[in-house]
Image 1 (tube, rainbow, N blue to C red):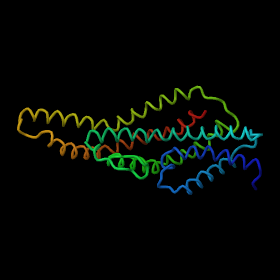
Image 2 (cartoon, one colour):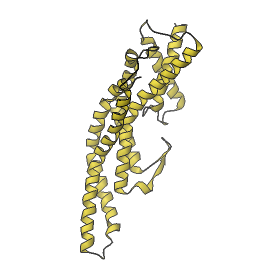
Image 3 (tube, helix red, strand yellow):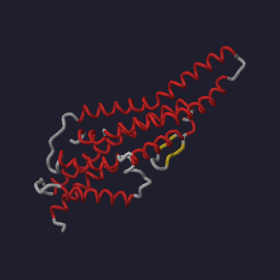
Amino acid sequence: MLNGDLLILWFLASMRATGLMAVAPVFSSKAIPPPLRVMLALFTAFVAAAMMPGRRSLPESLGSLVVFSILELLTGLLMGWAVRLVMSGVEVASQVISSELGFTMGQQVDPMSDTSESAIGQLMMGFASMLFLVSGAHQAVLSAFFHSYEVAPIGIFRGNTEAGTMLVTATGKIFQSGLQMAAPLVAVNFIISLAFSILGKVAPAMNVFGESFAVRIVVGLTLLAITLSLAARLLGDTMSGVPEVMMRLIP
């Protein structure tokens, strides 16, 4: 049976759940209808409110309720941003790969994110989203959300002096993971450029610049298909550490 305390807890938990699902990949995808996303956030928040221990701090006035709501929303946004870091690394990799293969000029609007993405970028983001679901990372994110109330209960704000350092470290790993996924194609593109540069010196009459595009695309796409398993392993290792990052970013 719903009582006043449970309704307040439900409301505050829904603020944290809304912040998480507004930023976290897959949960924030436009492929999910907004009413379904709202229902998912409310249901997740209700389960979290029902699981909370009996001893907790509740707001005693409207002003404190507003403060609690803002802090809960901020906590959810930080947790969602920690999950978003995985996809940010994929975006960096897709930009580098598209630039190396010459696909940056053929960008298209992605209706799911309202951003201009190349064909490689859409492929990589779709692959990462599928891996996010197949690997069970979405379940780990929800589990971390429920356990977040053990680390940062409603109404108890401990402060986090390591959050700033953790933000810088996690942001740096975006570029590290992105470059690791794109490194094989960067190396092969360098070899192709070097080979065609030598060929241009040997046969000056040959249109080396035009001929290199077809070779880069064929070799690059073939290598991308071969190295997808390595990228999947790297993404899997990164996704396995997402719950820990979520817990460490809680203010």
